[in-house]
Length: 614
Image (tube, rainbow, N blue to C red):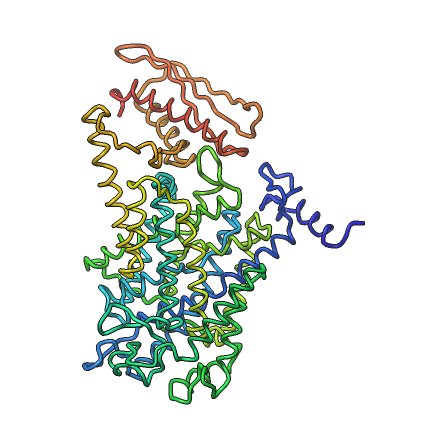
């Protein structure tokens, strides 16, 4: 007997929705086996449950930069004890909660609708830390202001859009040495875990007057001084909020994940938060102070619409400042090599959408363009670069295969916008454990690094080490790339000069670096180039004969056009055959074969006729 769910899945599959998202049974040329409407809905909710922590975590991290607030204290350069500045930062944090939920909803919706990928989008962990602590700095002590940093992110998005449109961004990810790709992701995991253990999270570690870092976890009255907060003079590891976060936000969450409870990270955060809300307790988030009373008054609203007031459209287009361009460049390569591009690529691979030959995935150009557009829109809302989230793997594991999963996630984020007082009242010790756990999930990349060859191992290790110790992802990427080029470049030169006699003894154990098959540029650029070539040829050369015919290629939905042109040149008679292809509706491999043939034909024509009309 066919149940209601089965009938619903069957009806949706044959509808326009089913054909658009290539559900199983839709009859689409690339229908995704095993994709069902109700399964996609469940997968989308699961993805949101795994990602929802970013709403409060992102707001907490970026608000550490101070946002649009200005510190005017002459005695305290970071305004740690200034109540006016603290109130301003709290308003920024509330706005960032709305901004995070809004941009996560918009970007996830576009990723699902246009790219048909089951991938959730949100401001990326690691990128937001780099934005807040390395570029803007804690309470505005960095190289540029918060407003200038947003302008750099806004421009970065459009640069990415152009690079994605021409296919260069996808190609750069595919040619990166695999060990460095894995090391960057793992290094970001260490960085995130370090933040989770820091005073903005659990508070397990803090500053130390003798060493670089030391044990934290003391109460404010045990700080060295008011100007050195989080430097514990004594009473380390005695703060009850720290232990609450460790046991319920950390260990309990891990146990739930051990038994594969969906939304385990969110459950841990909510349990710690709920325990921290009553007044007065030793772990309350609302102490009886002016700041605590203000937080509690906002919390009591529960459901409200809080418009973005302080961080919306707060960009300062001061592109004449060289430091803004420095931040832009570092955002670009950190985003390409560190998170955005690699995470999107990894999730597409995990969903089984990557072609094993070309190493590209379906609708990659559209997906990367959506990602780039979301980066710029996020800057307008006041947040750091948006990226594909690795927590999307939870929804994919639940059976998500199409964009319906991402759209469901987007709807959940949209609903979250109206519960901002709840998310604004999630304390740092509730999210600190989640950061450590996410970091532990990202560090597992190190098992696939080629540790057998020192030329691959040392650059990867430097990347892992430098990222958390410098509190800067960019420095780690620079250390890894430069060391890789030097360590592997010198032996390569010696091998070429000596004819192979100076080859390292274990060179065979090195990671093979090859340029993956396929072209840099997407299919549409070849269509454009061939059309442009034909137009120029028709203007520059008198055609003695022109015939056009259309041929449907066997086993393909592709309509190919052959343009056969016989030209009489001053020095010879040449017959030129141009071939271009519309988008292949079947496989990436088949499209790649057509593309290579087009490229070879075009280059041959250019060599023959280049001197006559170019």
